[in-house]
Length: 289
Image 1 (cartoon, rainbow, N blue to C red):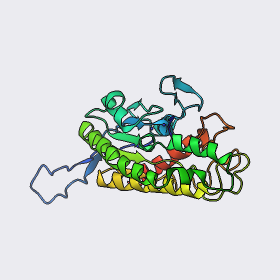
Image 2 (image 1 turned 120 degrees about the vertical axis):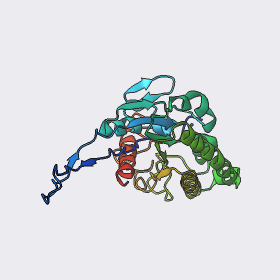
Image 3 (image 1 turned 180 degrees about the horizontal axis):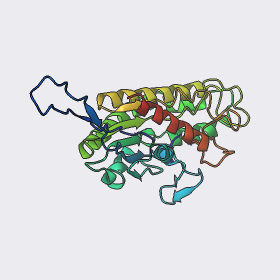
Image 4 (image 1 turned 180 degrees about the vertical axis):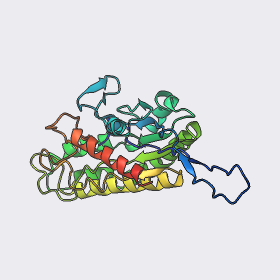
């Protein structure tokens, strides 16, 4: 789910206007007016730019097409673009990206004629990847306890609160640079279950840390949803559709890999099934308008 020590498929449907041409009677006589003839306009043009972190870039998922950003040709933005067939598609998602990285490496892709932007960001600002790795290691020595919760205490709430204004500022910049675009903030897949049954011994999180981590995920997701609404963007909820596809599910069911991946992906990130599911949710949101 989250970037290294830690981008999404949305299309702005630009509606073509249909102009009705009415044939007027040549004479002022009582001859009935001709029926209006509708002239179809040009096909909708979608110019799509994908921004974000590793959740969107899909590191480890075949086929990797950008070594620096560990970006896959099967990341969710590419799957969305394959369905939408946009007039242009630019994917600048990059593993490890934080909100501070967007200005230099990703925002330059935005244009005045961009009509759709997807953005997945925030997890690296929050630092969830480091937290997940640390918690997994601590669980190795205290399987029945909650060592990670005791280590971090209430600090995660502060980290999540500090992430919100950074994401909000990023969305405002997107709106400024691409004023004609439909903007979607795409959330993260569900990673941690609140029930540890089925996790151990394959996964190493302590039993008491799993519900605590799940609550942190829920809090981050809710924060992103509120931030999107306040910044005039649509939020694409991925946690709801992935609740039964967390890291503790069997191979072929889980959408996110854990510390020891069994499908091509890096730890705590979506596999190809997860990226496809994320794309489907983005397309659903796009079709709802």
